[in-house]
Length: 196
Figure (cartoon, rainbow, N blue to C red):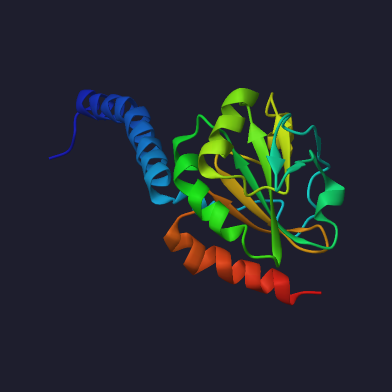
């Protein structure tokens, strides 16, 4: 039995109604898959292998380390050093979790740790560092987040590894943890130290 012209027209209409719904469901499924599929710490950075962005940030006033005022941050800070650049804020809960690890890492004299204080109140930032210790040899203040945007920061905390040549060697999105420090960050630091 063949379809009547009315049944055929009704079938086409049903198909036309279902097509947008099917397309929407396919896009929603793709969106949900991409949203849940990725670990944000594995987001690629377009800056890897490129020179660190031009950075000139004022010092966090009143901040001292080993009895000396901690300077602000500029690209000259990176020259000839393997440097970790940590983007942090006192209001950032994961920053509190990673602070003791940064303080421990600061004991390694082969590297230097510098900070970009992101959209923070200076008093709160100083209190944070007084509480956990100051691992930073330089700390720049980024009150409006503009410099962090240039670095490609998605949110705090984020940590960048800069080689002696001033190029970004690695980017860690999210807090430093005991696990990713051992598994990823320490090997990346060793690779950067091995390069001349």
